[in-house]
Image (tube, rainbow, N blue to C red):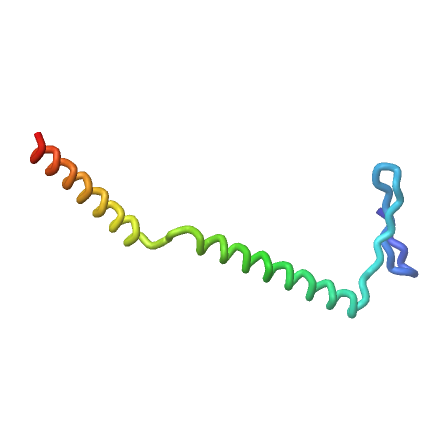
Length: 83
């Protein structure tokens, strides 16, 4: 990697190709930061929406277990009544 102090550029060769890195102007840097922030916000919104699809409340599972146990008890009672 070579640094040109006069133009303040970095240059290097990678797999036979020459690359030159230049610094961004403050305006371009600001625009880049805004784009990155909007992307992060979109990703966070998608993650929040996908998290809302999953049930986190344990009371749901407790009520489901209660319903299942009462259904099993009902089936046992009905089988005893018939049999």
